Length: 429
Image 1: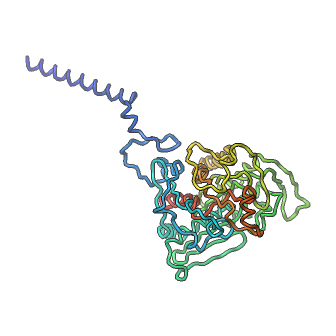
Image 2 (image 1 turned 30 degrees about the vertical axis):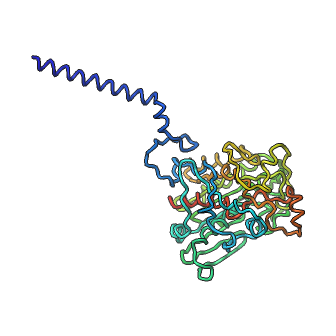
Image 3 (image 1 turned 90 degrees about the vertical axis):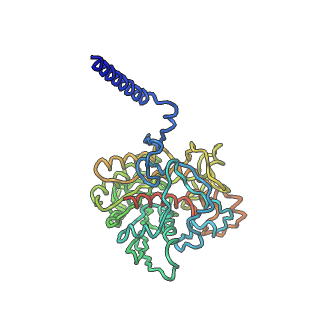
């Protein structure tokens, strides 16, 4: 009898202990201690939480790794990833800053470091092997070309000397492309600054056009040239910031029968054009074959800037010196900084359209490079670029507010980071 009673007491003790343990776990879950708070890490802007010590791939472009949130770290050991003078693909217009007299080279040594993960180091041979037999095309404006040249320079740094390479350059109309024969890989750039048809579509003769005319619902003229691409990288922001545009209903071939309407700076014209782009993708793109990306707004840093032979005035205010790119030698380290040239309402348009596309079964990766690029006011050519006019260095310095290019990027530089992130997505796909 005593044994039975002892056994019952033991069982009761175990039950009580179990209830206490369960209660403690519940309290710990609902009201974590400070130590447990310290073990939780927020890893991106979408409120994704990861426990410290959890095995996370630091180089994965998964939702748990936000490549676009971080800071610039000076690194003169592993950067730059290539040298300007050794890249045979370098454009002569705005990317060759060292060639045109820039003496401070620290802009080449800044490495983008995401807060809670690492960007995989670019490997040109690995990329060519990954996309063997495929075509990668950048579509957009001169910032898209900036990124295309960066990609070619990054790849070239892994290739044998120029004389022993098997490489073909082809250009037809708006499309420029290099074919890496050994890998059967084509990497091209297609000039379409507004994505839809416009009077600025000539890749060589568009800078002097003051009145931009667009057919917001016409994209087939350009789109048919992208149809066979395996990877598409789009950008289209800069040209939409013009204060006025003229919308055309009809054809450029029959101007007398067309209807023209001038419109001011409004979001609707951009939204209509991107809807035309998204509808074209939905109908024509092979969803199982083609991987697509859309680059967010690459910020400007200027008080005044000469763009396309047209001086665009930006309101003078106390932020002008902070936003101006001439004579800047280091990034902005304030992580709350937002470039004043970027309209938040404008960048929400592609975000929204891309979300709706995904709901309809068409996946486009939105590459949110705006903030990370915005910190780099030091990375622009400013006055160190090619000028068609014969302008003395003294005049350039004196009127730097007029002649500085604070839109494009020196290479090596910021677009290399865009391509490192792009590389990580491609390699994981």
